Amino acid sequence: MFNVVLFEPEIPPNTGNIIRLCANIGATLHLIKPLGFDLEDKKLRRAGLDYREFVNINIHDNYTAFLSEINSVRIFACSTRGKKYYSDIQFQKDDIFLFGPETRGLPKKILDDMENDQIIRLPMLPESRSLNLSNATAAILYEAWRQNDFAGAENDTR
Image (tube, rainbow, N blue to C red):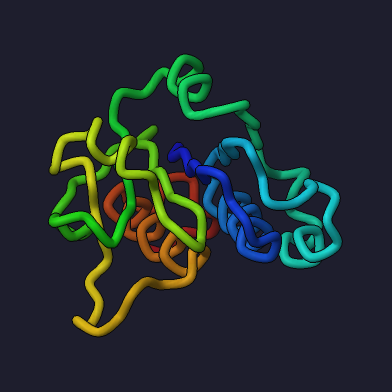
């Protein structure tokens, strides 16, 4: 299924919400250090409820280590600096969605190493700066899952 990558996440409840999201759609979560919190943080555990045991979480020392450990070639950086809307992409099983830290987004160096088609964004009104990390992750992941016919969903009534 899909891979969610949080580059240097800072806010425990956001990561907790994303753990819960990944558990509910079968995505693998990758966390790239440094983390702005301890994985045993109460706020992280509270937001993630008891879903952590249902998620494959991989922790990487840095972005280079992450790149050397992955098999998928399709990485999409999710950034307000992207020119292409997430809805313009035909997502595939095993795609990787890379999100930056809440207060500063993905570093320019990472974005500069990607093709323009690999940098996607959610539409917003012109005066808006950004969305909450867990909300943006949910919007993009659910679109990718929808495009893949909600593969693995329980009680599919279609």
